[in-house]
Length: 280
Image 1 (cartoon, rainbow, N blue to C red):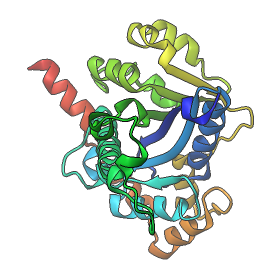
Image 2: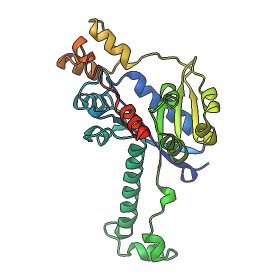
Image 3: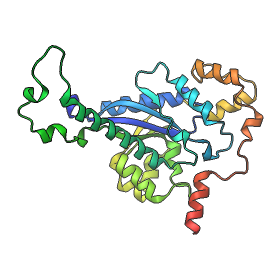
Image 4: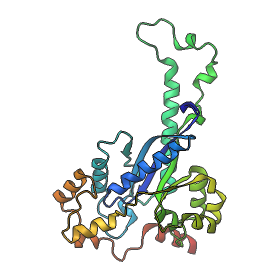
């Protein structure tokens, strides 16, 4: 299948990234290899969207530092970048809204490019675009071709998929919209029975064809929680996070027993909000 016939995809990963690890970066590579390998898709970009401080997760350090670490981790990447919109919001933002924000951002960019393109001329050439493309009507030239806009899909691990089953952590309508309108690319590990979880969930089962399960054959058990634990104990995290991230953590002394106590006793923002709405 030619590239022009493939659906272009942007992988969006939301999360704390507290701190970002080599495993987070591997998720993008695994997902890209899988999606490109289907022959139906072409991954053109990966986006890391760190959650804002209002998420109120235990041990969550400032979004300012988490964003900088993510930017350092992707500094040499040719296709993965960091988006700061979610992290800059005063209030916690639902994942569905983050997906919608980035999809609208892509649609606006595509529309701008298509409206500008008819006015482009090569230096030294006398014929205008319209004269070169007489077989296109003016309407066809100016109308946005929404089918060509890349599709945003949520990239996640099996733990996020299984979190859909935690009462009041997610709205049922949000789960349906996320998997139905956008889709999931879920990296699974040994011991995670993602297929069974999908089978036992009505909304996930309904949209199962829009959920891509990617097996992680080269197991990697790095997690932000374990990184923070090692740092609290004065242990090395070299080769577990990018060197630039490690240096930044050490320079600013970001993780300590004190930092791990941040937000202790505070109800997680989505649980607080969804529980209140359910009881209202």
